[in-house]
Amino acid sequence: MPTRTLADVLQSEDKSLRKLVSLLADLSMQIVAEIPRALGTTEGTNIYGDRQTELDVWSNELLTKKLVKSGLVSQVASEEMDEPLEGSHGEYSVVLDPLDGSSNIKTDNLVGTIVGIFHDEKLPAKGRNLLCSLYFLYGPYIQGTLATREGVFLSVAAGKGAGSERFLTSGEPHRLPEKGSVYGIGGLREKWTPQVREFADRLEKRKLKLRYGGSFVGDYNQVLYNGGFFSYPALLDAPNGKYRLQFESNPIGFITEKAGGRASTGMQNVLDLEPTDIAQRVPTYLGNRDLVSEFEDLVKGASQRIVQG
Ligand code: AFP
View 1 (cartoon, rainbow, N blue to C red):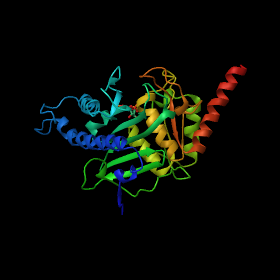
View 2: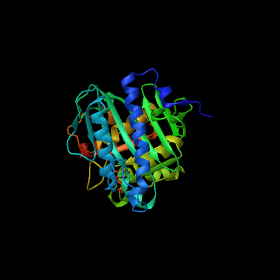
View 3: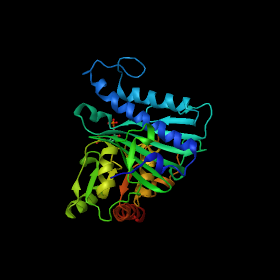
């Protein structure tokens, strides 16, 4: 039985960071409450008293407005905006994918919110400099996954408290299981590179089960629990894949490393990639270290063969 909360896990962190995570935890509960109202099946209005707008826009506005007003952040950047917003003062920079996988809403499949937190960093920033990252997964129950320097903590919004006190956890850092058993790869198979096809065939032969639902947080969560490999890869017609470095690949890559795994672009560690642009996309390969390294070897082997001509 979990006896601790996310607030307890953060006890050794600065008070301002604890406040920030708590605010995000509260906002995640508001987002999940809003989802049914956006379907047109209820009479509900959102917390501003307006009839519901597009959920992506609504959750982006909710998160960015509350963060900017919090006094805790100097910058907030979101997948839904072209430029970061400046906060009046505050020591943290926050990157957000407010509602990841939102096209899953109409079919009642998984969605979530992804957040990365930097201390004293100008955005766009390098993933290696993240202070912590987290995602909230809106499934049959609401899960909060938090990675700090201490490791990854899984929690469930089942407590009586508010903010991060609502999220109950065992307090034990979570590690990827040593042997992976699931995999997922995004994009059309016909657009996969030969290396991605080859690797998917190898995983199938090793009896890893395919798990793909079309939401990064939902699909990645399968790998975090069961071990394995998840990717939105470089595609033949989109060499940088689909995921945004700042809002998706870095925060989830950070969680992966803290759980003992590896995050790669195919050529290098995602977290060491120098950002060039807030909206930069990057091919993303995540999961158990042995699997991600094996995939990198395939990619590097192919590029050496091209160089040798
Ligand atoms: P949406 O937020 O537009 O649904 O995009 C979600 C996403 O970026 C990510 O969560 C999924 O892993 C990926 O797209 C799914 O992409 P495909 O539809 O190409 O499988």
